[in-house]
Image (cartoon, rainbow, N blue to C red; front, side, top):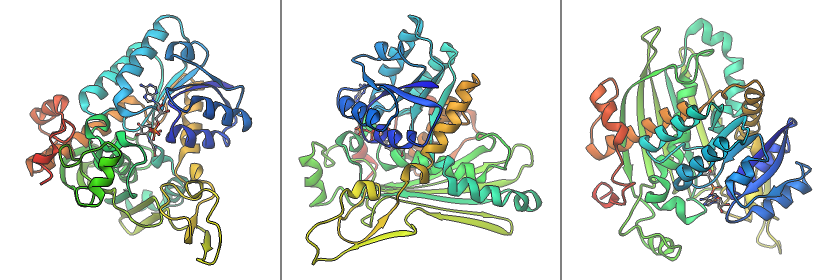
Length: 410
Ligand SMILES: NC(=O)c1ccc[n+]([C@@H]2O[C@H](COP(=O)([O-])OP(=O)(O)OC[C@H]3O[C@@H](n4cnc5c(N)ncnc54)[C@H](O)[C@@H]3O)[C@@H](O)[C@H]2O)c1
């Protein structure tokens, strides 16, 4: 039974608490966070996830658990990783380190995190739930024979959209790393890359060849949305971020030379029932699709009804309404792949190994995100076969992330 320790007790930590109700070989032993730790620990105890305690420092947490999970905001990654490294040097016996997406805000930070974990000789898991989504994994499983006969997919489209993040730090490009491309493009790029990767090959098998991208501030720079954000402490008239992003990446299979492409589309203006994941994969003679809003369950509450749903966020992530025709997804933690990513990471850690996706993989995704920002900034295709470009990406910090987005989002 692995003892887990969460750093962070916000939105995603609560989602993972829900996922852990479906995982048998782990106990949520501790939580450490400036806000929300007590409430999350109480919930975990009520749900029978263990005798969950609250810790007031990363060092104290690490000395009482086996697996430490970084579920805190993006801007705190390095400081937290340094605390974890110090705890390990002081004797904490860690069997695994988990970090939520994105690994970091830029390539330099991602590189530091990956190198620190390597130096500690502790296995890692980069939590990208979408490549573990059962509907994607099962579709690929059913098509395994078809793929073997006909060849791997050549085009994958992946989109994640909702109406905008829940906390102000997500909107602030200097704290989060950018706008929707950094926040959700990392999901869609990883998911689409996985859908193109030939079955049985590692998740970093395909070699990225080129990246093009278009980003824009379409909704949240206009009134009344601009003022709504200002009231939450975020000023998009001075430090804007993109609320729309479209990225195309071309790949080459290093073994067969076969080319493939992904299209990742993301927005924070999906004024629709709630979060939607839309995936389409096309192979030679076959395809599969996923639409996370197509649920077998639906609700309807008319104007005549006195009350709304009990908890719209528990019915559907980023839900935008509490009455009318509503989508109900009764087990989002499973639908979005959270349960499967835990099962993968914990069994890998028990065997002393990295999860399917490790920090090095997270670093690769960060590099692709940086290439997308560079492509948008330069208004040109970024050649990832050119070593000078790869060198430049290592130290590149997008203008949007620097708080100078007005220059490229006009
Ligand atoms: N996989 C997904 O679909 C998904 C969804 C949401 C968020 N995330 C990722 O999870 C991470 C956290 O996002 P969230 O939505 O839970 O954020 P949040 O703002 O809801 O919660 C953040 C939590 O971290 C704590 N915290 C803040 N600063 C800290 C610090 N320096 N040290 C320790 N804890 C600190 C806060 O008190 C809070 O408990 C982000 O990196 C985000 O990208 C992933």
